[in-house]
Length: 273
Image (cartoon, rainbow, N blue to C red):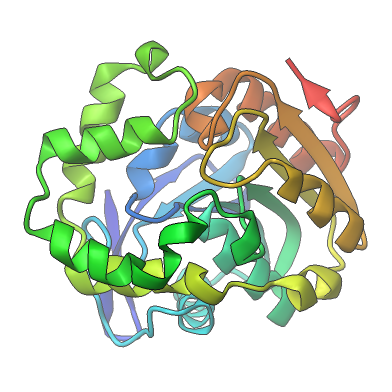
């Protein structure tokens, strides 16, 4: 991994390839290791950059607030530290929320946007019954964290966990063990009163919505709601996938995203089997 100073905060990131830049933002309780099955494929003719968000994995907490505005501020500072004028942006789950907020607030910096299994309203989140106490649950559970527990949490997002490569799961679990309690609890609090309706309407760049049709963490119907609200949307519903289509069906995911980044509109993208 590489490191860079972002506003006095040491940020770790994975980087592959050369060409037009693409930034990948991981989800909650995850790190850049989440993209290990996608980096090489997406880096064909592009420079792909996947940071550990502040307080996650090998990145320091720093002075960025753990809310959507604070994480969007981090992303802009990260962009400037890398001397990028604009870039394509891909975000998964919470990373998608951050990406959407950033694209709405910094339209000149984002060329294309990809939202992967991204909730835009608390009502669409599968664990919404637990949302009021989620930060407290995270704080209480943090001291019981182990590789086994984190692997179980990772598996919960998959539709067919028995098909996932064990080394990949283990690498993600080990990296997530480094994430700080403050980062986990605060970012968990983001989804309690989540409403990105205005952000959806404000994003004008081409936006690809990717969902697994078996997602149990975020209702797949969210994809249709987002498509109706976005000014320039494309939808790819991946069958037989849960909350992490980029992990569960990486070859198909990589092909869909590559097609979008190159052409702006995946062909026959309503449902991909």
